[in-house]
Length: 575
Image (cartoon, rainbow, N blue to C red; front, side, top):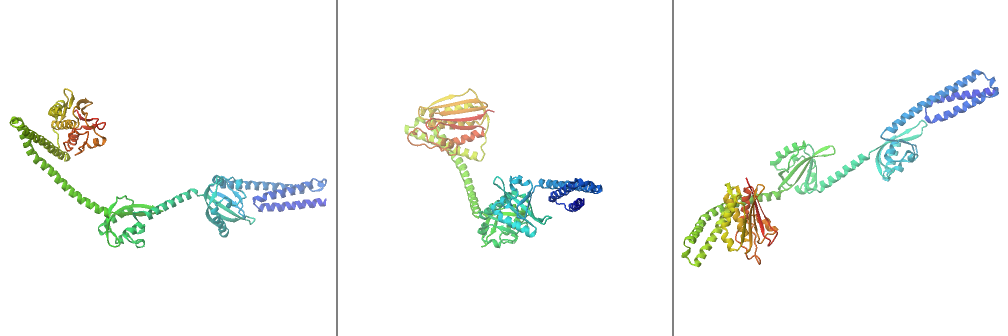
């Protein structure tokens, strides 16, 4: 009985000590130890009071022990509840932040990590637990990371960056903050809070590359580039500036552009105004100014300004290049243009004057030969008549040339005016054909007409007669003996269409592009071209095109090539 009493007092004493310790200690990892001790003590008590001698033990002591057991169980239960709530809160925080939270022991073995790292790296918690951080770092970053931990051990904290290896083999840039702490047992632990900065690092890399490209362009540009701050001080300049104005970079840096004796005084006020406008972001066109080189020589430059941002700083970028030769060339060109204009005016005056001066005697010559041939034909011998006819033909050609020159001058100066009236186009074509009957018969050409009885147009009769005459003359000259010419007039959808088709020499593609130009005469010589009439200077079709344009019409030529004939087509609007 005495032994039993001693045992109960012993367990009671141990129970009190355990209860006191439990009240003072809050570490989660000790709960299991307390639970084990409690069960050991309670089991000992139960064994004691279960013996037959139990009856000799006072009921009050047994009751007291049972109450102590119950109170201790309740306290353990409450402690467990609070610790569980605390653990849940801790887990809620660590698992829902965007940062990776990891805890390492004194040997840098991972003892805790939240789930964020799995989202970043792809490794599960089980795959990384117990391992060292260096096993998942980019090799080149390991020395720097070791230094980071050493710094943290020395200063209780450290900060750095490293690349984290992902499960797929790629790497992600991380920014880490390390803190060294000690738990209640006095054991050293490292808490690492790191975040994904990969996007930021990629952006920084792009900026670095962009800066390198800009620097490369800046240094190697053939254009002179200078950077000014908001006060107008020279911040930087490229080698092209030194090559152009012969000043060394050191002579320009930190100098205000207003204090440099480079700008010609005439342009200083202009550049001052431009600087104020440009520094406020206004986009300005380039200008030409004069500046002095270090040796005193004055040169022309083209001057361009723009506002750029480098980092957080706004700078004025000035780009300029030497245009001295271009300005000198432009000056020469202007002088030559002035001379050309003077010569052009002289030419115009000469053509106008000569044309009019020639026209009067030519009319007399042509009229006199016509009179001789018509009234005194029987009084001349054969040789005399041939000479008079030669004079008449030459007079006609000269009169045609003079008239064409006058027309060209009028067209060029837009002084050619039309006198439009309603005329029957069929009648005009027939009259023109009559004028060419002699030449048609002489060259043994077959002419076919396909004309409506009446087709009235509002036209200038003289100019349209000139047009038809040019087309007929051109067809006759380029058609061999026994060839054919077809003249067709049609009314098609509000247009009068004139087609003059011949079976003559035809035109190549290059000739068709040239034929309507001024003096665009097609020269053809040699075998197979003997029948051609090569008279003329190439003004007839050019003037014809201008006449058609003035009437609001169109003219063009179609041909399948050499010896396949040509078709000249004119379309005039029917008003």
